[in-house]
Amino acid sequence: NSWTFCGYPVCFGLDTGWNYTFGECWLRVLPDPAAPVFGQRGEYSMRYRTKMLRTRKACTSIDTPGGLSPGWVCPPTHVSWTSGSIGVQPDLSLRWQTGGGWGNMRIQQLGPDGVPIESTCTRNNGQSCDPNKLDHGR
Image 1 (cartoon, rainbow, N blue to C red):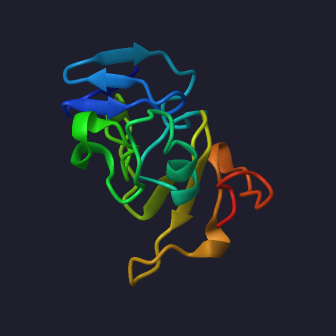
Image 2: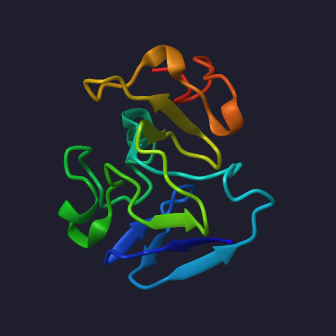
């Protein structure tokens, strides 16, 4: 009931920097597709991108993200694959940010001006953002 697809020449692997390639697709069964307990979407936080900068020795600059770097060696600015759950409508009033690790997402309501409302920050399944954990806080 859920799927992930790499639609770019290379999709940067979240945990190890492994490169998935165009056309790779994988499926998974979730107990409740509307409430995933893991996932990544949106932009990668700068802290995560900096942490992953030396995953591949050829990457030398955080200012040369993903597809702009030779051989796609540097971490991208945004999650490069597409995922979804069958029968679930996306909520476009939310902003998602990924900080690395399974389930380490910041989810915030967007204000009328499109700017995230910091006080609405939650993680997967409504957990509060914890500023003491990598990328839960700002």
